[in-house]
Image (tube, rainbow, N blue to C red; front, side, top):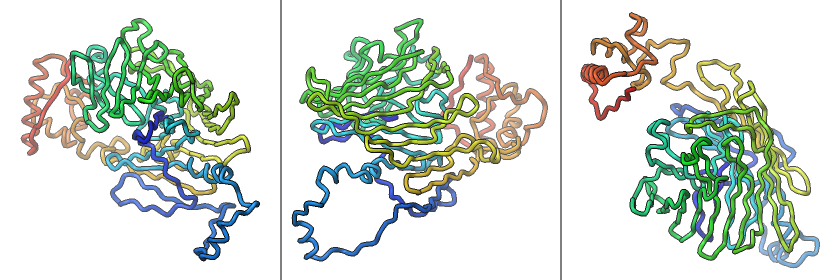
Length: 469
């Protein structure tokens, strides 16, 4: 889930577009070399699109006359078909990896002065995390600043490498003012400045809007045995120059942080006219140690509800229910999103996934297989095997560089044969899939052979880096 905000006239970027999806999509043909293909096929539906001719000037004038039976502006604003259309998801294909992605926006009541949070659900075929809060493959990334693992977990708290995730856009941070602990994006786009102040973060964008991250223990993810080892700071508050604010609250359990509510648009002591609530349900426990300490995920977000507050009255606007299917007690598949209003249900958006009964060659298990949109539109996802994948243990073709680590290689000619896939079944000990260069001497010897092997293959070395332990 991507949580963000629109402040004033400026719309902060969100990678989950919210364009309207047509009920009967056109067939899409992908280039032959694209790893992923998507074909769409409309199914029969009770809703039909009628062809109409342009109205005459007389008909237009008649339409402008007041008609007591005509729908009011308020009724048109709350048209369920328009509401449903605004909630249609959009898919895309990563042109580099061929991985599919899909975004489903959550429609919220507008806030005051355009200060409205953004909430959306995002699927990525590259997402392999079992501790997702929305389901396997689905992104529930909240606005946060967290430590980068580029240099390994053992260096996580020794270095000051951070990533800021704001409004769905993740950017690595670099220190630009050491005296004042001010950071900026490594690849600059929004020119937002991030300052580390007394164990929390304050970000300021070009319009003067401030974002406060991790100002309390409930919004910090830290080692339970050492609270100074903070891995992540969650977004707590957004406030523009006019004093309009958005407040984020969270639920913390087992080290995991779950979104609990968003209240907007507040001013001073006033909490705001709109609210988003996140409801949880239990799931099989999953513990991850990728942060250098254990974080246990015990819940999934199974529903999102939106409310408005006016003159002391609370009104429920929309509800999004998420149905999950558990596979092998570990994989939580999101199979259905149903949108509800106080007047009834909208047709659901349904998802199905490859279950492993297909050929192992394509490595498709748990990947998104099909999306069924409301009113019949269907998207089928087909996949091709990666060119780096060799089915059935056949490694006779060339192996991409960097796929294996070597030990006890005594000749650069042997290394050339290994890189070309010509010595996979020879003497035991020539290749080790789990070996490491354990001493400086071994590392230097290996790099010497490696350089000679690459020269023999007609390749040049741009840079090298070898890890020892």
